[in-house]
Length: 132
Image 1 (cartoon, rainbow, N blue to C red):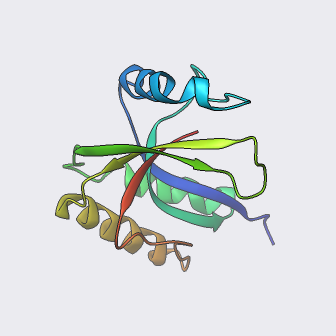
Image 2: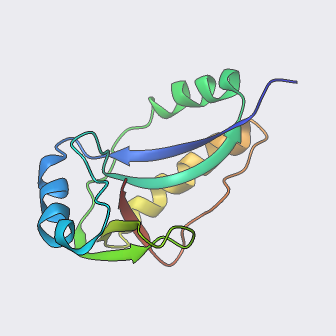
């Protein structure tokens, strides 16, 4: 059996600088160890899934066929202390719960379940852009 790895299916920001600069402005002086760097990928997690590389490659091909990917509407910023490491904080930019994002997530879930996999987490009450 092929090894299964955890993958994140996400919307990536095309222009990351506004997001990372906002987080730096509000966050860099508040943490002992600041880990948000220029290589951070601001994203909205749509689905997390354990899969083999072969299957995730097929899922990726299907995802690339999706059209009308929505633009998120940002609503706020928050900082959350890591549960395991007290010196690490996560910066999160919240986005509105637009129906278009939920429709996109439903399409992604349908693709994932086609391959007999399931999303580890489905966001119902909130969608958050996570800067890592």
